[in-house]
Length: 187
Image 1: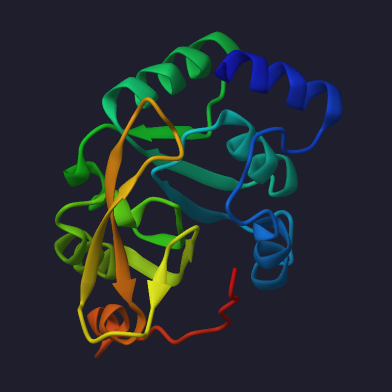
Image 2 (image 1 turned 180 degrees about the vertical axis):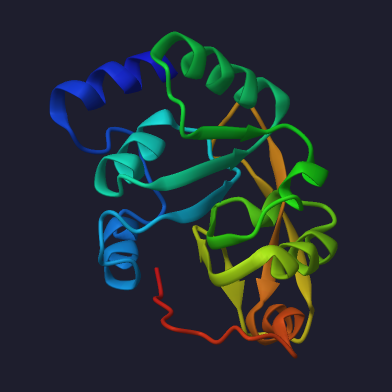
């Protein structure tokens, strides 16, 4: 699947797979307008090679880090070796994430699957210099419950459990930080 994405991207020169926030390149261009500017990008939960290709195609000096499950990372490792993807840095352990400082952290439909999401976010805040983006994440404000646990069945026969977050309570994780909301969109 990943190799097919890579081949299709080379032919069409644009994202092939579904992306929870297809406008991410435009956002990055707004905040990193110089294509030659070096910055570090962490894709937390990244799972499609064409997203890496899209980012590195638009930003020549980006250090692209990806963190995901072992089987996804193994696929990336194989592609990296086969196609000499030198600026793809695969992080296999959460402690590896803490070795770097990132200019942009992307949580594309990922944080809701992390059991210890508060701990993860607090540690990500420590290594994030500028931006953190959450996309494909469900927030609500209708009850006071901090989280709701839901069963995801749109990928049958697989079933997953994930969190929906109370928006204001989720934001409280970022209190006393240098971060502020730049934009939010309803989906």
